Image (cartoon, rainbow, N blue to C red; front, side, top):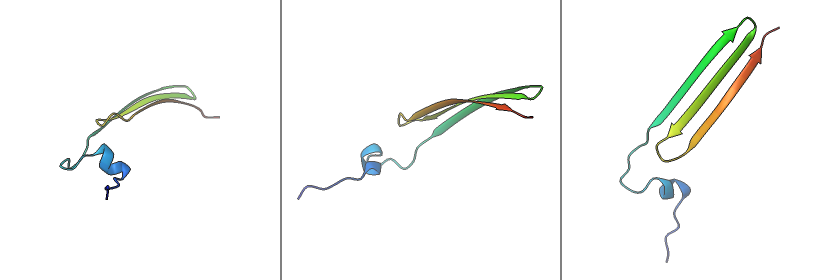
Amino acid sequence: MERVRTRCQQVFPIGRKGYVTLSLSIGYTIKNFRIEGWASKFFNDARSYGMHVRVNF
């Protein structure tokens, strides 16, 4: 019978005990405006990037 592997087992082969996440962010405030940019990198190729803009009034 063929063994069914979970998504976690497919991404992390047997023998890998963990993973590393690198998250970076930067922000700047001008009067009542806040601009933030961020990026996250999982070393198993998952990535996410984004930008936030906030106005306080």
